[in-house]
Image (spheres, rainbow, N blue to C red):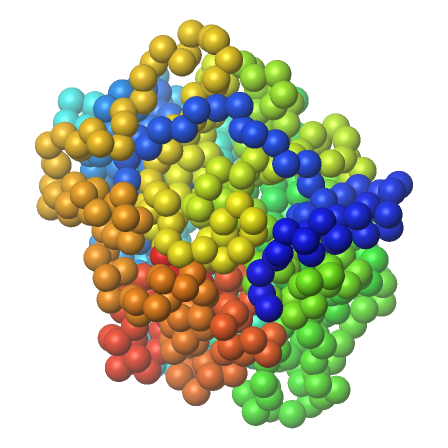
Length: 600
Ligand SMILES: [Ca+2]
Ligand SMILES: [Ca+2]
Ligand SMILES: [Ca+2]
């Protein structure tokens, strides 16, 4: 049994409430559900996994399309999508968590420096991942980089791509890739732990605590940038006031992170970030220079609840000979294991501001701890809300990949604060953008992946695949006058072949099964029909770097129908599964992991 039943939900709710009367909410069932005080419309759909959206100084909504390889501009008045630039992506990105990810405008965009910075995956012939020397491993030369491009307002096009920082680790899992220009005018960028020590990468150690040596920095070897928040100058250089950690200054601003997909500054300059936990304990952190955020020694608080650090790469028997199981399921004795409290936290350790969510045992009705039963929500972005709608004022708004919801949290309340959940429908919410007046909120949705219905049950099909949704504040207000385009409104004049595809996809988007890649059509019919993540296990598994390894992840939780695990679960292997699986299989490798249901 893998779904919540309303009855169980109620029971669980009371149980948790009794246990935690004096504590913060402990599980996703324990949140306050509320109706989002906004009216929904579909602005555009059929995009290729939109990853980051921002309102530009030009009044357009700019959006990266991770798997389609584009940075596009969406007209907020009529929903037309115009591509501003197409990146040539490595083949493998289509199925992994790589591609065109975060982006940011130059702080002087519109004032003489019309430039954007984009985080994108590429193949680097001059580098090899030292832990993947085998050239047959498709990830041996796959890296991420920050590219600066010039914008021409007359043509609406970007040109002159210039690499400002190359060689940042990439993998099929946990790339993170959120970018934000800070009040200091510098670029902040999140880099995940590459999904190591789990799923297809379970024999690769987590490097989140690894710091670069002076020699590595000198040689521009950024291997240690996994599981970090980076801070860089606009030319990609290392800021002089970056923290010196263990005697070495690099781009590293903070470390000990898992998969930080959200980053944003509050009005007082506080830097907030959220990151995916393993099964439990997604975190909201206040990021400070030189801070160590504890991963992989600690998930959430250092409380020995549920999480145990089992380091598979250090097993006394060859790791590959073992069968990986989820982080909450324990591990064989040959795998070194450490309780959270056994870790001697250093002085610069920073516990989370809050966790989403911590449990000491599975809630009643969810004993199998299957994908949708796990407390993790798959936090995919974070934005500080100001203005317009009083109930959201001063809140951190977090999109979630699981359960189609926005979670609101008051950072002033700290660890004892409660979460309010706004369920917005059967979509995987990837990022949101708040208009200046706070009365319009734009949300980007994934093109595929597992979703839940309002009851928390696994559901078939996304309501709005690869879409930009627009939410307009309900109560009076002038902003409501600005009519968002309706879904029916056709995109205008595709500017390129890419757009033509989009327009095409648009026609089928209502059925929520069309992706720009066209891959979903290849998906097993029953997956879509049942809403079960079943297919993803296979999909995800089929691909791991070395074919053989993959079989192991299929049933970590003992439930073949479940996605193997969170990361997986939260992230798409989707197109991989659907579009690229055959090819990948033939190559013997490549794809993720992401235990994402290919199911739409
Ligand atoms: Ca942490
Ligand atoms: Ca913990
Ligand atoms: Ca955002």
